[in-house]
Image 1 (tube, rainbow, N blue to C red):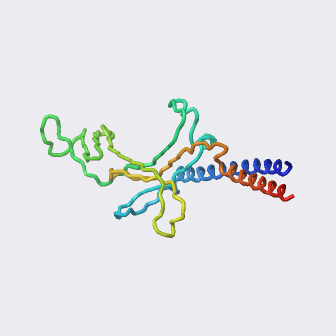
Image 2: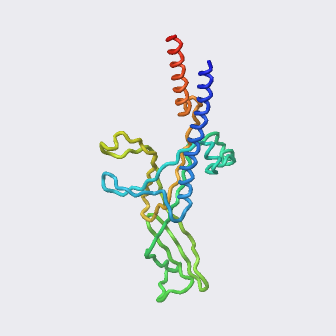
Image 3: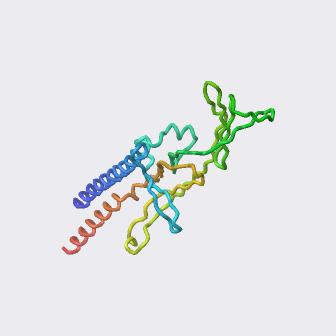
Length: 229
């Protein structure tokens, strides 16, 4: 009985330590991803080539419990309440830049149909493209943007990847997210992709499994010693 009581105490201690280690690991990973996402010099994005030779952009997923996400400020409980969300699974943020350089436009002729020999103010201009439209009017004092619109189609594909080859046959899959965008003017700067890990039951944690194995081992040894007497 004394051995079982000691084993129970050890089991509880192992479970608590294991749970704390898991929380620290999750917070450390999430913090590193957050710092990279908010930094101007660091990025989570990695450029690779797919099997067709096309360039792909991907980033690691941050897998964290809802409790840790709330503690770190990655998710705000008030935001969940305002959106009528009882639970959340994915929180994704993108940093994109639309950059259009050296794009010629067209002068808009006067409404009366006449063609002036030299442009005169106000001068109307427009820029048309399958992916954007802009209209500008230049007055004597300054130009004005009359209209500016973009078509943007970002796509995220999240899943588990594993490097090919025999050397990686026993390696663990990695949670990653891939970015695609048909808009040629769109440039991806960074991705923050947070996956909320469902809270494990106490009997599903690694600490419980280790502790249960320890207690079971002590129980078996105690039984064997008792039978050997």
